[in-house]
Length: 82
Image: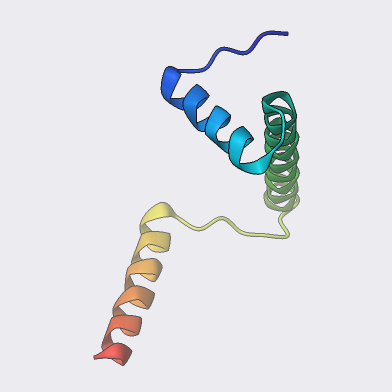
């Protein structure tokens, strides 16, 4: 398999390889493995949340209500700092 990078990304990869003493192939392999782990964890979390909503264990919140709650919490934190 071939992977093509922009010149800037390739330079960063080569610099990291030089600094770490590891081959560029190994660095790319490790980076991709970590990326896939994160994607799989996110996918599992989203599937679980969807199942929670579908089963009724969790009730959805209207977007405007969620934004209002977040804004209220942010303002309360700012007031405590002042």
